[in-house]
Structure formats: C-alpha cells, structure tokens
Image: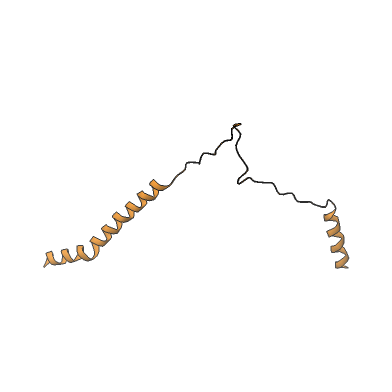
Length: 81
C-alpha cells in the first residue's frame, strides 16, 4: 500500500515539479548565454573619424522670449482684477 501511494505521489506531483524545475533552469541558462553586453563596433571612414551620417543626433533649438515671464505676470494680474 505504501509503495502504491509513493509511486502515485511521484508520478502525479513530484515528477512534473522536478521536470518544470529542470526546464526553467535550462531556459534561464540559455537566456544568460544569449544576453550580450558587447557594444557593436562602429565603422570608421578612411580618415579615421566616425561616420555620423546615419543615426546622428541633432540638438533641438528652442527660441525663448526673455520677456515672457513678465508678460505672463501682467496677463495674470489683468485677469485677476
């Protein structure tokens, strides 16, 4: 009787739990092996300078009125009255 209960417990519960643990460990190791911290080498032109024509970052220029704060304050005072 005890042998039957042990076999049933292993077949229905412990076996699948162990298999899931083994598979998740294998997937975790595969994910770590596939992760890369290597930075791709940037091709250089003949002059030795980096070629920034593709994917170049251009700064954004925003024009700001230096008197804008005073205009907003005057507008708020006029509407509050």
